[in-house]
Length: 185
Ligand code: GTP
Image (cartoon, rainbow, N blue to C red; front, side, top):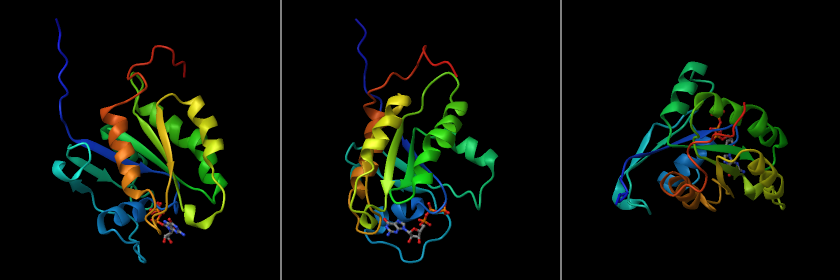
């Protein structure tokens, strides 16, 4: 009989998404529990020790800035990630369109033989009175590696810790198969 044991490893969460959607603000809001009025273009890599994460697994959170980093670095970071959070701004339709036209194809290119779990994160919910989730479900149907989606606000801190918990969960308890034999791209 083969018994599978759950191996604890470091979870590496990479935040991607168009410029200005709030990636750096989300990371700084999580760490300082307040909204940063002045944001640098990129947050330093952050390590959260196992004992303060809900899943008890050491977690690194990695920001990406197209202003500071090259495409080569972007591809390298995607390949090192255990999960990618694609951040969009709920008040910016272009940032939503680019999930399927740019970010998901880019992630897939870097995982030709496997899948990298993805969480879609709709930031800036404080700015609108509506939800973007219905449109997001359509994107989730197109890409099976998208584990879940969440709307949040770095400004009001709504759903910030939940967002990082969902990302951890997508790695530790994925619902989609890691290897896909059906993908034809
Ligand atoms: P790049 O470095 O260009 O990739 O941007 P980024 O995705 O890291 O966004 P950043 O955190 O720099 O935020 C861009 C702007 O959006 C800043 O002016 C933030 O103050 C603002 N912002 C970020 N999150 C929120 C939010 O939840 N609500 C509101 N109202 N503004 C936000």
